[in-house]
Length: 142
Image (cartoon, rainbow, N blue to C red; front, side, top):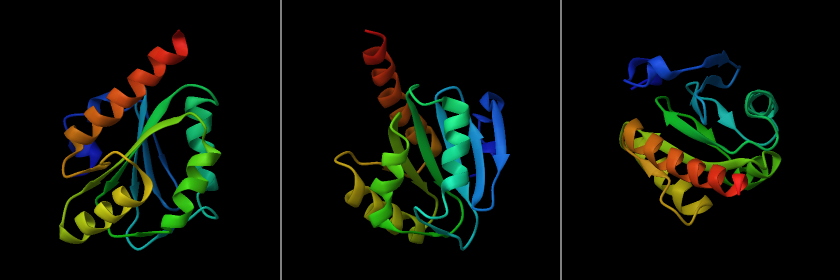
């Protein structure tokens, strides 16, 4: 389910269309829906990183959810490089909606995090990411 078709759609603060896909901004979270067939790596995410930085700044904690409504590939070795470019990225998750997406999200989850970052619905992903971001916000305020 696209984020604009979900119960969270009325909380979208801003949306941006990029060549790799659409970014939907919430107060503490960005949901990215990559286009069908794109390949995501460190060399082609500059525009997305720029948009995230413009919206959240350089120090405000935030989270990203990859809502896998389409089939796309991602260079797993570049995930850490991409995360290193956005120091205030506090949480990340992947939502899958079919068997192929599930398999890819499981691989991504096992590769890049100690936590399980894979969910099969947007509600669970938002709750997970928001709780991680909220804990970082509380730490940064102390």
